[in-house]
Image (cartoon, rainbow, N blue to C red; front, top):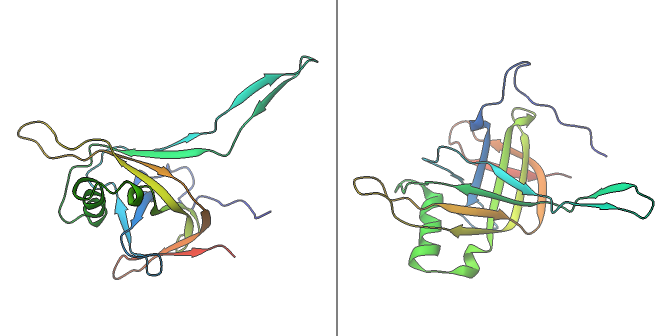
Length: 176
């Protein structure tokens, strides 16, 4: 069993939200380009549905049952921004193409910049995520929003991520 990771932030200091970033692969499987998802989104967190169940056996003992979690994350309002590569990819697949199959097979990476080594934080890659655009529009005089929900799925690979100091490009290295 691998040893526990620790938080790489100063003791007694809370972890900044900016240290938990979700990325969409806007490149290819062979040459991924990790584009952050959530620009202009004020609040977002992953929800873990463990499909829990509690039973009591005939002897009166109570047991809890958990299944592997279904993990989802909503991004709202997600105002459209032409410089956001992740939004552009999602908009083209959802609005222009209405390509349900492609939207249900997206490559995603979650980087926990606060966990593990500072230069190589803990990361988890999901090979077949579903991105559901739940609306398009907004109030008059405001911005066009494209709220969406990501359900992480497919093969989960854990490993580390690194960020190029000059370009900011993210790369993922699977655990051995």
